[in-house]
Structure formats: C-alpha cells, structure tokens
Length: 103
Image (cartoon, rainbow, N blue to C red; front, top):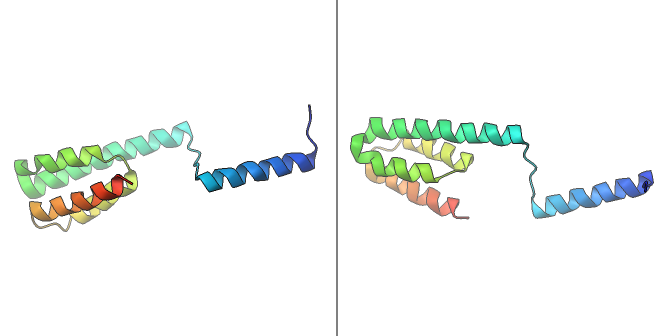
C-alpha cells in the first residue's frame, strides 16, 4: 500500500513531533561508540588529575568518577577538579555531580 505524498508528509510530521515531545534522541551506533570512547578517555583524565592532586588518598574519588557515565557531567567534573585545592573540595564536586547524575 502506497501513501500519498501529503499523507506521508503528515505522518513524518507526527513522528517528528512525537519524538520531540518524548525527547527521544536518535544516536547512531557510530555516535554511541564515540561517546563511550569519550567517557573512557575522560575517566582516565579525571583519574590522572585526582592522582596528581591528591595522591593515593584520592582513590575513592576516582571510583566515584567511574560511576558517572554522562559525558557532559564528566567534562564538568574534570573542569572543576582543576581548581580544587583539597580532597574535601573535590568531594563537594562529586556530591553535586552525583545529585545531577541521579536525574
């Protein structure tokens, strides 16, 4: 069964509207692989930052970072960690991020 161009356009608009309403992002396999590589890479950066700044005592912070899988939150963590002067300040960063990550 073929649809008229008008019906096909109407269906396309309805699908587009539904996807936007439901916020259903379409991510290709290649994009997903890229995101996963980015997450792994930034996990390594964060682990290095923590080790350089806080030594072995920062290991629990590294473990907390590994639990975060959203790239935008990890980028925020890395940026804020550069300015953290103490492990206590770094813990506050993770506390804020974990609240954001739960939503």
